Each structure stands twice: as C-alpha cells, then as structure tokens.
Amino acid sequence: MSSKIKSPENLPKNPGVYIMRNAEGEIIYIGKAKNLLNRVRSYFREKLDRPKTQILMSHFDSLEYILTNSEKEALILEANLIKKHHPRYNVQLKDDKRYPYVKITDEKFPRLVITRNITKNGVYYGPFTDVGSVKRTVKFLKSLFKIRTCRNMNGPCLNAQIDLCYAPCDGRISEDEYAEIINKIDLFFQGKYSVIVQNLKKEMAEAAQKEEYEKAAVLRDQINSIEEIMEKQFVDLVDDDLDQDVIATAQGKNDIVVIIMPVRNGKITGRDDFLMSGSEYDSTSEILSAFIQQYYGYNRHVPKQILLPEEIDDKELIEEWLSDLRGNKVYVKVPQKGVKLRLVKMAEKNAEIIIHQKKKLENSLIELKKYLKLEKLPRVIEGYDISNISGKFAVGSKVSFKDAKPNKKMYKHFRMETPGPNDFAMMKELLMRRLKMIETDPEPDLIVIDGGKGQLGMACDVLEELNLTHIPIIGLAKEFEEIYLPNSSRPIIIPKNNRALHLLQQVRDESHRFAITYHRKLRSKNISQSSLDDIKGIGKKRKINLLKEFGTIENIKNASLDELANVDGMSKKSAQNVYDYYH
Image 1 (cartoon, one colour):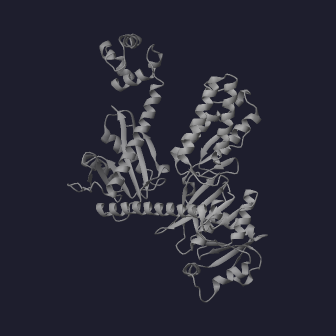
Image 2 (tube, helix red, strand yellow; image 1 turned 45 degrees about the vertical axis):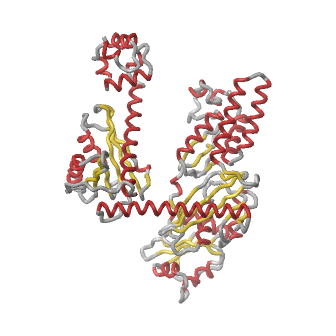
Image 3 (cartoon, helix red, strand yellow; image 1 turned 180 degrees about the vertical axis):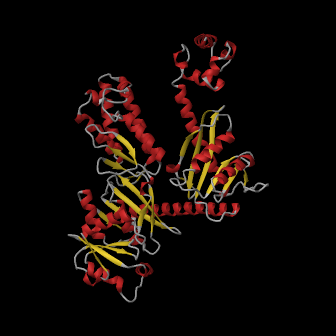
C-alpha cells in the first residue's frame, strides 16, 4: 500500500521505497531507504551538491512511499519497480532481452530450449551474446545426451528411431535415469565439464570391457567433442574452485557499458556486456550497485564471489540479499593483487574495447549523414531485396539496422504476388506492402535499395504515392558501389575504406542474404513435396538439378528425353524414367 505526499515532513522513520513524480504524474525516480524521513529530507535542502539531485528536484511535484518490513525488502522492491516503470533518473539495465537464454523446462522429462523470455518455471542459463554459438551448443547437447525435443510425448518419433532420443514417451528410460542426464547438462552450463568427461570415460571403459566397441567409439567421440568445445570456449586460471562473476565498467558518451565475466571451476566461461542508461550523473559505485540489483534480480546463477573494481554502497545489504538468493554466503570483493585483480583489469579492458567499438559505429553514422546530406543521424536503416528463379518462389526481404547494428527482431519476409520474372514490379510491391505498415512498424531514417538509377526511380514513385517522400532513400549499385540519390543525375562515390560505405554494404548484403535464405527454404520445401518423388531413380540431388535447369515441374513435363538426359547428374535410364512418368 502506498501513500502520496507533497513534502517529506509526514514521512515515517521506517524502511521502505519512495517514488517521485513530476507535474504530469510520471514517475521520474525510485529510491529505497532504511529511514524514509531522513533519506527523502536530504532532497529538500536549500543547497543541493549533486547535479543529478538538482535536475531531479527541478522536475519534482509529489512523492509516494511504500513501507517494507526491512531494508532488504526495500532493496528488492526498488529493483522490481525500476524494472517495471523505467524512471528517467534511475540507472537502468538496458536491452537485457537482446540475448537468448538456455532453459531446462520444468517437466517430468525436461527439454532443453532457447528462449528470450524469463518466467518463474524452469532453470535458466545465460544470457548468451553469441546466438549462433548457443544454437550450436544446444544442438550438440541434445544429440550428445539424447534428451527429448518434442513438445508432446505421444509416441516414439524419428529421433528415437535414429538413436537421437531415449524415448521417455515409450518408457525406454526411467525418470531417475533421465534426471541424471539433465544433471549432466546442468554441470555443463556451470562449466563443470570435467565431471561429465570423467563419467563418460568411465562409461567408455565399461563398454570396452563388455566388448561393446561401437558404444565405446561413440562415447570416445563424445568425449573428444566436449573437450574440443571447451578448449575453444574457456580460459584456464590457477584456482580450480573459483565460482565468481567479475564485473567492470567503461564510460561512453551517453551510456555506460558493464562487462560481466563468469568464472566457473577456475575457467572464464564467457563474457556478457550490458548498457546502463540514466547514468550520466552517477558514480561508478552507484552504477555497479544498480547493475548488481537489476542483473541478479532475474533467474540467474549467483556465484560465491563477485569481484568489482571499487567498493559499492550498501555492500553488506547487497551481500545479504545475494546470499538469500544463492542459499549460502556470497562475498562482494574489490581485489588488490594477484589473479583476482588481473581478472578485474581484464574485464575493464573488455569494457573499454566495447565502448571503442560503439564509438566507431556512431562515427560511421555521422559520416553517412555527412555524405548523404541527411537532416538527422540515420539511426534506423532499412534494406530491401528480391530473390527468385525465373519468377518462381519469389520473395522479398526487409532488414533493419539500429545504431549501425542488425536489429533482427525487425526483419521481415514477404511472399511476392507479382507474376515474374519482373524484379522492378516485385520491388514496387515489396515497398508498397512494407510502407503501408508504418503505424505498426515505424518508418526508418534511411532506405537502401539494391540497384541503380532505375530501381531508385521506381522506389521514389512508391514514396510519392504514399506521401512519404520525407523518408531519405538511396540506391546502391553493386558493380562500382555507386550511391544514387533522388533528383541527382550523378552518383556519389564514398571512398572504399570509409566506414559509411562499409555500413551501406553490410545493409545491402544482409538484405540479399535474408531474401535468398527464405527463397531457398521455399524452394526446398517445394522440392520435397513434388511429383518427382514418385519417380524411380530420382533422389533429392537430381530433383534439385532438374528444377534448377527447368524452373518448374511443368517445364520438366514438356522437356524432351535428350534435354532431360543432359541435366547434370542424370543418366539415360533416370531421364527415361522421368520422361515415361509424365508421358
């Protein structure tokens, strides 16, 4: 229950959370206090030393407070409210859901899934910054431990038939045996892979003793695979008992980057980076404290130690809260020498590198703005491309870059309805369909079309028809990397080593990759469901070659025997089979 007041004089001396609002009723700051009266009263002094407090109080209109039973409860409530309301003057962890997590589901026979949504159910590992790597790791673990992948356990599936699943749906493995496998996966993500390897070696020795040489060979390959992955992923330290998170920061122009390096069983198991917003007036100590509260408020592993570059406020309180989450004592330390200090310095160096990379990306946008004479920085850039074979399986793609980096959640595929082959008309359809979605998919700061003057002219007609001529648009011609602008007869040439050109090329190439990937998927789906499947001697490879050569099943039907026989990979007998089937 909260109470609203205008001044601090009526506040109680209890622990709790205070919520400050401006004249419009918006929440501008949320804080915690051991003694609400004393803490909030400090904001109402005649002389305010800190710039942040001065700015905050210039917008202050009223506040409300929520009483808690202890200072620790206030700490937890503060973090939850900041996450919910995102106040302007609180330090906040940004873009936390950029990265995926690996989840062990809360089921009788759990599954291993990749997700970006955190719920109360299941066990989570992550977040992981390298999406491709985590996909490969999960695929590897599924095949290694043969856990189920199906949502509904309604009978042995193909995976069970090809020995990729123990088929708990068919009673081939007990709940206890399956739980042991899940425990191995848990050890894997904790970095305790040596325990897994040890168990596998024991199984391999037992299999060899029983003369089950095939099984022993499989186990040997599994051991080699795990050791190879771990050699690439982990960096060895001295102490094998370390269970730590190393945290450091680096100051950027508008944001602060926070690096966290998990150390499990004496090995650095990765590196994650996060942005903290609203931090321009806060000290490093305050930023680190806010990060710890918001980061470990999720369903994450809490290590035995957290190493920091400097002391933080409320250290004892935060240690008590983290200890509750972990189930035993957690220590927050500032190392002064040895391996631990080197780890903190390593994390700080990584944070500086990321800040430098962010600066380079920002510079590429500034240069692009200058070359294209744009009114504002092109923070959101969209690229478009068409992919088809003789008009068949025609698809369009839209890719989106935000702050010079791919923003994949805003990518979109389109199935083209325009009859082909007619790339101009298809591009017109693609732009029309996308730009009619402005209400749900906000307009970009720049549109990049793959092509020269002709393609750009057609695209400009679409913008004019939709009254969107204020959106900047360019054509990027591939042969000489010339940039065409509307109402300009001569192209712009950006130097080849310039970051602005590299960014445009990346947008163009990504839109092409995204389009052609979808096109191949549709084509493959069509291939796998064609009448060619019924013809003796025609496998997947010959199907692909036939469709590449003739484009459609109808053209294959009308082909002569000699034309069929001349297709790469076709024999006279298989060509005769195809010809006879359709005649």
